Length: 367
Image (cartoon, rainbow, N blue to C red; front, side, top):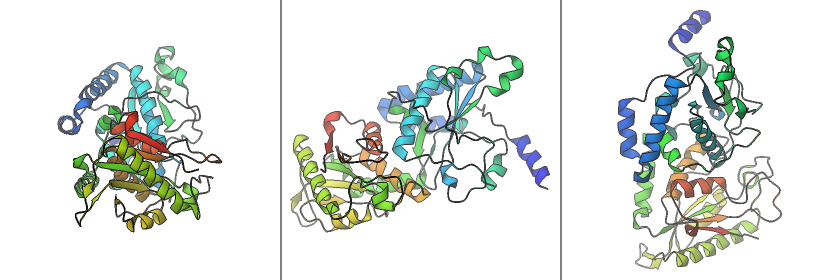
């Protein structure tokens, strides 16, 4: 029975996804894309349509973090949204420059984001069997990458043409970081209907349409917030509340710099309005008692990015932060010895997809 199902799966499936962009997907993408991203969307479509007719090579960007809790096959850590997205968009930019077919085996999570075009979605040769048994026919665990072979298919003879496709981890050992167009994110990804409904709900609830709400992204670190053993400690212990108040002082300074107007609270008292996104439930609990400012919070409980619900909550906060007037981001401490960048790559992604200028962002030292 298993052999029979495997044959059927392989018959109806192919790792090469050669379908053109579907008309309904094109219509929806052009309707949803930010106005300033129309040219990028058109370039992506034309580039991939051209490469599918002229290039024999496909680069598949891959990682299956959605299966890390229970997997019968390969399971690789894709890191957080900020890190994996900046690497992914950089590599896709390079692949398009070389007119190479691009497919993405994205770690889709329940009720978060999905690819805008099915033509860009990788389909394993084992198709539904790969989904049912939770495995993939390739392995990217070594995180290797060979850029010299990207687009260099003329050096292959016909017999070896079948080996020119490459499977590349979202975050390869050799960094490929370029200045990518933020519009590429909007062209490639879209929120699921459920996530979009939540974005719209909070957008209205937090009065983001007034352009008078600042975003605060306060990362305390994976070890502090979730106990993940990666030395990521950006604030901890008794200093958490002090750090929280420093973030608010930075937010007040940015509000003055951007001429953000206080708004009436429920009692008619004028207060500055901030949307706080944090990885720490204790910080959320402190913020709920705040009286000097209006602090907006989602109802989601912070969860580590290693779990799918963590991704769902993070994407919600990513989109909401991108729609604020400006961002306050905490710097890592001077004695930091963990894996993170000086400023959160997640917050940097929010800045980019929200098309914010450098003047709209303030880094806040907690030392």
